[in-house]
Length: 509
Picture 1 (cartoon, rainbow, N blue to C red):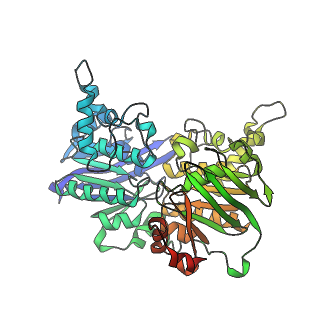
Picture 2 (picture 1 turned 60 degrees about the vertical axis):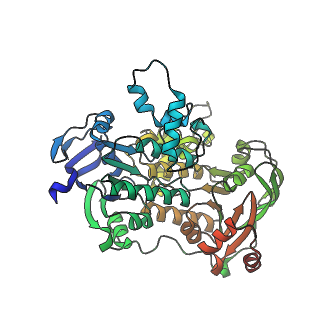
Picture 3 (picture 1 turned 30 degrees about the vertical axis):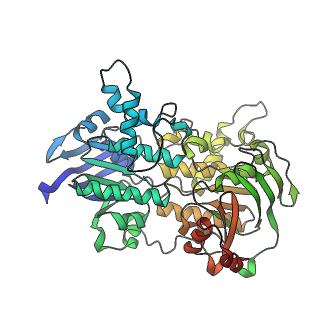
């Protein structure tokens, strides 16, 4: 099999100060295979990919390309070899067009005096035709996150890749878009292109990959043929223990309360959603489902006065809210965790401690108006321990953390103000299975303690597993509600996509 290897990693090590990100890992990639790389956040997956792409340099170890030792000094050198990397975090230039982003590398190398915008748009339209109907002339800043992810993938496909690295590529994609990507992946593999596929989603790994390698705590654990193992084997190898449940027990019927935390009536934003009414009761977790673009996030942002102009009646613990800004919402005890942690949820170049205290600086401010660094660090340390955050120092920038640990910092920021109600939009996007279980347990514990919890998620198994009830949004309206035995993926998708669902609505009334 050695002559079939395009890439071989031997005893690679990498440290960041006291943090040992890679502890002598091995990895092999065959020609034309789709090879999954799995592991919890902080396991070393992204560090290895950044070394393969020339972004980072290893402390020691060897890299072999087509059987020959190589040193990949930069991303440009990686591209010359035929390596393309699609990062988990979107890294496009928002102020220029889709076409310019896709062909930025080749444009930079061109000696032409003038930009051929028409030619760029034509070539971009050809490559985008494989993925989605996106106008090449659109500014990237005007695209939703899901379309930006597709532009990242299109950008990689234009390179003459022999190895394509995809780091959590479906995190922001709809099911249809993800299936299109899987079709393209299989076609590329058939053409002899090798793909390294990083994902926490076992279904994607077992439906689309040939082999899977597991890392844990910066160490190589195992490589297995996907067809010869079970998803539980991968999960257990990732966390180093048997994960027998991903979701905590739900609210028992005998413990259900009639005490209403949030009461929303006739909430309307004329352009985005209409006549939205629902209640959240004490002790329960309420899920919100719907197709991308249905208005899920817009509704909760409207409640918190993050965007739009809304009318209607919103009551928190029986008190009618008259909010003008999101600051008013925070002071009332109602906070929102954004689905876009990079754009809206975090200050990436600020420290972990500074991010966690950012919602209410009064918690860490002295009477003289200065930041008490000891108080700030104590707050951050307490919440970091609660969320099992993996970090070097609390003074490190959030950008130094893996995507999943960045998400934990975003959640810690919400918890820092002791909220009465938390809206969590895609709370476990890009988070590994072990961390997901931790977050789910934290959310259930918060709900049990009396904090209102509303979860928006595109992962239906997660919504069903964590929620006591699920509201379904379609075209800016609540199309139905499911709970108990009728809370299934089929019924949720039916309510999310079918124009009329009278029988199911009768069942859930």
